[in-house]
Amino acid sequence: MSTATAELQFVAHPTTYRGTCFRSRLEARWAAFFDLLAWRWEYEPFDLQGWVPDFAVTGAGTDALLVEVKPFIRPTPAQLEPIRDKIRGAIAASEWDALLLGAFPFVDRGFFCCGWRTDRGSWMPAPFAGKKWEGYSLTSMHSLNGIMDQSDEAEEIRTLWAYASNATQWGGKP
Image 1 (spheres, rainbow, N blue to C red):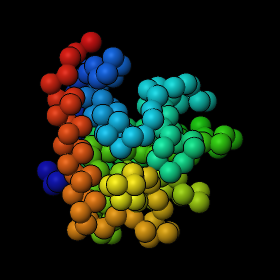
Image 2: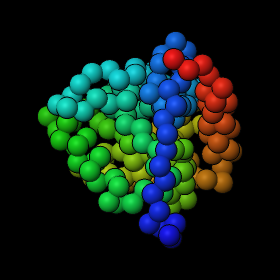
Image 3: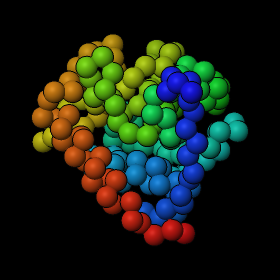
């Protein structure tokens, strides 16, 4: 089986982080990462037309960002489209923007990215922007002012992701 077509099967490990019981360790890891970035989050905030987002996040350069977490490493368009369609339908009549997160932050076109964000009606990689002393936010690929992979800020984001992993790896189970 080629790695291009192989689908990994992940088992979710319920994890408690800061008093919140998450359905998976990956969701808890993203919550810890948001804390390290000083982004406010609420877990499974509400049901929006049949879709319950994993998080509502503020402080990421937007007032209204709904987040879905999936254990993607290198997702194919066929894997992404059903999820994107569901999210797109749920937020169509709302003020919310959406962000789809995978197994970890990644590099796309030389920029260090958090996930994929709705942008001008389509889904685009969501690069980090900012400086470690100013705080981080998300930007658009259209503005091309994200953090390049080779920068000190990209290394700091990698370190923060490692800290978030450590904070949740050995966390209690519900």
